[in-house]
Image (tube, rainbow, N blue to C red; front, side, top):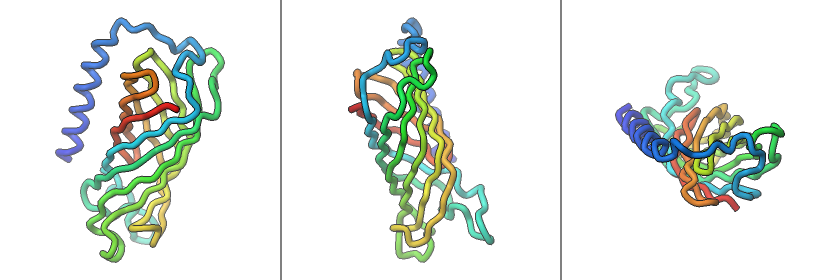
Length: 188
């Protein structure tokens, strides 16, 4: 719980400082396609999976059996499908997918010490200013102890924001279920 509080406090403070600098930024949300030209987004990130212990799954088995936080690394790719979706707004929709590895102290049989996650879903992005965009991810996350020894599926609901410190490079922050992640995105 301390790690979650520290991470959320750090993200809140960093966001407040960045927003203060952008207070006079020109809104581009009403300018369709007024964002960096890209076909895909590639995002390496670090993450934690804090929520799993609270949900039950199946016949007495836990939805996610890691006690406490699990941390790890991952990679997400999003391929743009539609631009714009709502004709009068600066928005895109893409298909998002990735691979994530997290530690796992209490996995199925004790032989594998990691969990393997494969998020798959849709991402809807809104470009607010030249420096800020926000998005939502909705989908599913098949996951297992080790390399798909046993397979479970979790829902994925996440919201996030990007700070565009270069035209095609952003700091990307994501909060939701099952992941909290921070990474760097590259628009290609």
